[in-house]
Amino acid sequence: MTRRFRLEAATRRGEQIAKQYGFERFPIEPTTIAEAENIHIQAKPSDQKGVSGGIIFSGENVGIFYATDIDNDGFQRFTIGHELGHYFLEGHPEEITKIAPMHISRAGFSQGKDFIELEADHFSAGLLMPSRLVKKELLGRPVGLEGILTLAQQAKCSVTAAAIRAAQCSPYPVAIVVSNGDEISYGFLSDTFKSLGKFRNFPRKGDKLPVGTTKDFNETPDNVLRARQACGETTFLDWFDGDKAIELDEEVIGLGSYGYTLTVFSSDNLPDDPDNDEEDEEEARLMDSWTPKFARGR
Picture: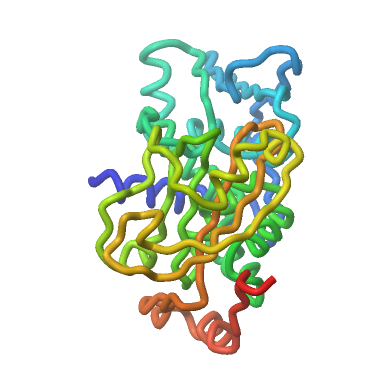
């Protein structure tokens, strides 16, 4: 089984669990699912820092704890969903208990993580944001940061998780980059964005930010702390060293006490997803009637 297939399978498993427990609309409540499984949930004191959460397997008993030093309900809910991934995903309890009964996690998409951590992240994204609900929420919303923020609010999820899920489910090419200071922390490009052309620079941890809106934004730390926003223009060539100078909207938001910045790339000049024809009749009809709105010109 390929790496990508396993991550997609983890996302689908999260969606299945949400449906199994009767959640047909936002928000999905991970604590309700944990309680139904007799899993004890415990918040860590806010002065205890360093990890986002963890899971404990003790005989027949299972417990989940999560950090509160980052005052972000969406991040905490994602962490609980991540730990539920370790509980529900095949092989995870066995893999964890081979080492110790307690497993410490750092939930949240990033590069360089253990694979079971990535699987748990994808499970949490599917659990809290099932694709069908995400697609319905995105219908009629502006393509880009505004739609992502609305999705995060409705799903009660972190902005970064909502951004990645929106890129996965949107029929329009979208790319996101999370950065800190003058360096990239990680990036995510939708399949449709990758198909725009050849590019030599996939955004990776440690890469320097190019000159432009995001770099300028990050030079003022207060922008990040106060979750300010900025919008500029860039090109496929400038950011991704691509073979085409496609114009892109570069929308930026600070992620508050989390300490990072999210940048969203989209454009009204980008083609939609040809696989959209495979949607079921209801979604196809809604998609056909959706006139997308973009950030340019605001």
